[in-house]
Amino acid sequence: MAKTYVEVLSWASSFLEAAGKEGYAIEYLFLARKHWDKTQWLIHMREEISSADEQQIEADVAALMKNIPPQYLLGYEYFFDHRFKVTEATLIPRPETEELVDLCLKSNPNDFKKVVDIGTGTGAIAISLKAARPEWQVTAVDISESALAVAKENADTIGVEVRFKSSDVLSAIVEKQDIIISNPPYISQTEWHLMDESVRTYEPKTALFAENDGLAIYQKIAQESQALLQPEGMIFLEIGFQQGKAVKKLFQQAFPEKSVNVYPDMMGNDRMVVVR
Image (cartoon, rainbow, N blue to C red; front, top):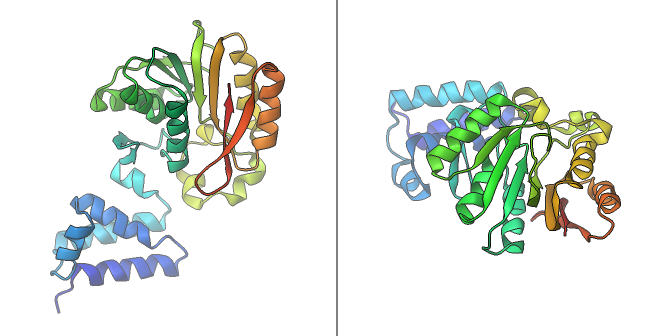
């Protein structure tokens, strides 16, 4: 008897759930591959599934069982309404980081600014800022050449002009900056077991983990930004939900004349530190 789309996807979702995986991932993947929105899904869900679509679902289930993130299977993720190419050389952009970009934009109106994004990965932060503030001069740095290659491609595709530099934190930056922004590696080795299996297996370790209980890169940013931040400049940082106090203390010591505040994300967890 012919199977419908909804029957095959329900089976796939239940199969994943029974194995302790995220069941919704297969629907997300399938709709993205078909370029169907929710309305189109409602229109087509009871139709007979094609053998090609059924084979694709089976292949995707097999990949999800190996904990490959759906974004790596698709090769992209959306961030701030732009579509970013992602590869295993880059971290997958997250909604919390959109909140960091939003906070930076809301805190800075349209006048000219020099901005540097540290550890740019896909280029999500730098490119989104430049797209929203075309007057800004945005530089994006990363220690990974393969990540920079992906970020450059994303800038070209989205159509914004960002300067890209290979740099360990701020080592390649010589001009003073109005804004320093970063979603650096901040997970400590002790938190390894808390990470999702797909993150541990596939996302780049250098973009995730840092020494000194996850604080090593913040220590470097605090130290190096002292000479590179304009007197009226601002720093925007994404942090781990348990790092608010420690990161605030670090930057308050580095910039005693500035205010340092911790902000929550939409889930209510400490997620951003702003120095102004």
